[in-house]
Length: 232
Image (cartoon, rainbow, N blue to C red; front, side):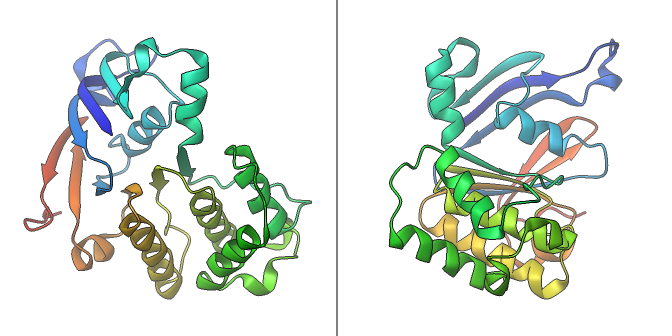
C-alpha cells in the first residue's frame, strides 16, 4: 500500500544532513492499517504527509503507493492515485460562498464519484450528524468557526470513499468531545478497510487509543507497535 525506502526530503539551500526535514525514512504500511505520526514542531510530519499525497516529491529514495513507484508513473496513473487519497489539512480550504453540503458534494465529485443518488446524500447527512453539524448543512461555509470548518474537511475526506486518508492534526481545533467524534469517524472508516495515517500532537489520543505509531525526531523515524506504545 505504502512503501518508503531511504526517503529524504530537503529544500533549496539545504546542504547538510542537519538541514534535512526527512532523513532516510523507511516505512511499510499495508492496506487497512492505522498509523499515528507523532513528533515535535518541525519534525517533518506535514512534509511526510505531503509526500504521500503526491504534493511534493522525495529529494532522494523511493516512494511507492498502491504498488506504483511514483518516480515512473504516467500522468493518468498519477491522477488515479490522487483520486484514491483523501487529505485533511491543517489549513482548511472551503469555498466560503457554498453551503456546507455543497462543499462536501463538490469534493465527492472531484474524486471521480460520478454517480449521485439519495444514498450519497444520506451518507453525507449521517457523517455531518456524527460531527454535530447536520443543522448547518445549508449554511455558507463562511459562517463556520475554525473547529467547525475542520470537521467539515473530515467529512469531505471520508465522503469521498478513498483508499487512503492522510490527516494532518485533524483534532487540532477541536474541544475534547468533538476531537473524540472525529477520531471515532476515522477509526470506523479504518474498520471498513481504509488505510488511515494521522499526524497529531494529541498525546491523550495516542495513549488512550493505541495504534501503530511512527515517531519522528531530527528527520528520522522510529516505529512502535500498538502493543508497545511510544513514550513521549
